[in-house]
Amino acid sequence: MRGALVLRPILDTLAPEEAAAGRRVRNTAIWLALAAWLLPEYHALGTGTTAHRAIICGAFVAAAVAAQFRHRYRWARVLLPVASCAAAAVVAWFGHGAMWGLAFVVFAVLVVAGGPALRRALPLPPAEEEFDPLPPRAGGIPSVLSALAWIGISILFMMEWAGQAMVVPTGSMQPTIMGARPPRASGDHLFVDNFSYLFRDPRRFEIVVFEFPLFRNLYYVKRVVGLPGEHVEIRDGDIWVDGKVAKKPPVVQQSLWRELYPRPNFLASAKTIRSFQQVIGSTGTWKQVSETETRCVPGKEASFAWFDGSGVYPDVRLVFMAVREAGASVVAQITTRGTPVTLTLPDTGAATLAVGKQSAPFAAPAGPFLRVEFCVADGEAWVLVDGSEVARAAVPLDSRGKNRVEIGAAGAAVNFRDVYLGRDIVYTAGDGPAAYDVPPDGFLFLGDNVEGSADSRKWTVEVFHPKGGGAPILGATEYPDEAGNPKGGRIKIEGGSYRFFDVDAVPRELPRDGTTVEHGVRAPFARRSHLVGRAILIFWPWIPAEAGFRPRLIP
View (cartoon, rainbow, N blue to C red):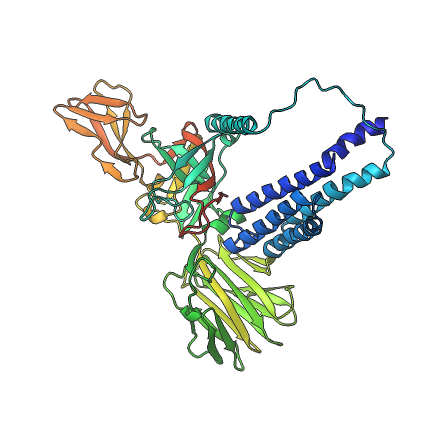
């Protein structure tokens, strides 16, 4: 009897009945399809491209359809395991190690087969029937209206207590978050989590919505780079905290790459690989095979082609597909601040990742086809082959020199396909100082569109000292309007008075006689009381935009 009390709830959860089992698998597949559609653009999750995302969603939707009809039609009973395994396979193929597709297969097997099998195997007494005093639930239109009412109440509750929706009018966070720009009438629509920061402080590189410290009636969206009590420096394009470079989490780093040379996909027109030019004096030949593929036939020594484009930066990401002949080695080199970082992938033997003259061997997959991702950022170099990280090494940040990107081959011919080159975000001091001491209750914010962001580097106030030694009053030198356009002159002189709004958006009027003013005093920090929440989701527009896939969770 005790065994029945423990096992029966478990079995009821897995598969209380044939139809319920199908419904649970169906609902799980639908939620996983939605999750795949909204996850960040991150290769390890299988959502690095819109095409991969669509294929994963399609597999889960097929599993949902099969689960819905499996107890009615034979074709659905055949399609369900096939679609479930396909969902796991495409996640594993595109995600290279992501386990949520495999977890779905295990869940489906437990629900559809495990529960009924355990029920037949275990001698459980039948459950006692209990009298149900509740009347039958109404169906039809009343049921639909009731469901809609509960959905509306839930949305209102979430908007009031758990989060809020907002539209981003400016381009200070582009291309991570797009602002209004022709032909778009408005910017990205965000959902903001107002709940998390009630229990913790923001973490570095999170995207935070906060009240503009110099005019609290306005909301700003920026990325937090400096936390309370830290010494933050903007140096050589990177963020340094207490003397060490701040390394971005992998999923954040993935979202910050800026495309320099695109590989083709079904949303972009094909561009030739001719942006890579053969190095002068390099032996061998380079021949264009198609718009997206070129063939390198090296001579006695390795043959290289370099990226002949503007804007090669110290922190870059190089991605390509290589098709090797027997005995061929794929060679790629990123020269960052004068330090060469060289990747060698031979057909046989150990591969190497060399930083300067220091070389380290590692094991790389064999075979003619390789998908290579070679990155340098934040003082590190790392290599992914077929989606799995195979090597990582430290890269000096104090060297000086030119930047360069090269690909090549040695030993035998190699075909290069679908080449992509991106750069990391390059932080600059702009009009502000290069170093900040963040106060104990302060946060330093920067925009991803560094060149066009009115962030902590640009915030200044006018400090008014009233006659008679009263407390100083702060007013913003300028702040943007609702469309994000800066408007100066908010501090007006009318007659013998200063008229302005202070930082709490309270109108002020002070006599000019006896009032002293400090002009352009920097006020780069937001306080804990200014925080509104974390931007977690772009839910509109529901189409891929010029900056990539938009409806997605924000890392």
